[in-house]
Amino acid sequence: MSGALDILCAGAVQGLVKALQARFTEATGIAVQGRFGAVGAMKEALLAGEPCDVMIVTDAMVLALQQGGTLDARSRTPLGRVRTGIAVRSGEPLPDVSTPAALKDSLLSAASVYVPDTERSTAGIHFLSVLRELGIAETLTPHLRTFPNGATAMRELASSEAVAIGCTQITEILYTPGIALVGALPSAFELATVYSAASTTGSAQAEAAQRFVDLLGSPATQVLRAEGGFEFD
Image (cartoon, rainbow, N blue to C red; front, side, top):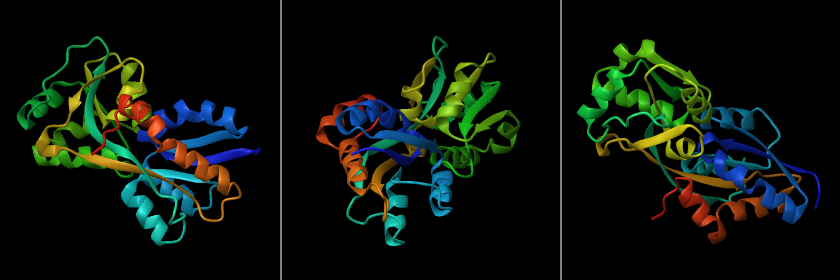
């Protein structure tokens, strides 16, 4: 095998892919080159014809794309469930986010709130709905700092100076240096998203694509996934 594998991947799974790239390349001689971002942006890129051998997004989106014939119906491999959480810079006091009331107070106390795209990312869309349920969407809108994906939002949070807080998928929080996980959203607002990988139909690297999909979801990588914030039934 030779060449490169093109991947379109949700930001929530970026850390896992990067952790396995070298292992896969060493075993196969095939480089892995990925684009990471909000799931909506990844879907748009795939449907627009951007090169892609492996798609890694929410399980619901994988199923929909398989039904449309874009992804191989036999290759879907669930990777685990990821909850949405709250983060602050490492070393900062951890705010109370254990209840809706506590979360509301903590968000209102922050000078800025770092989040992924509130229109195309799983966590960003959900976080905006949480703000609406808390009745503080209009108040916090001027303080929102939105970025194309959660990984970027967390990197920017890590380098911020004012009292700030962030919200995105827990995997993106755990993989970002300089960021501390406060905890998952309160149970009333819990969002646990299953992510899956699948190879694309007509991939020129079909064998390698399936091999990478299998590696991502294999028992051999379950500990790595768990350490990175994935949960399993």
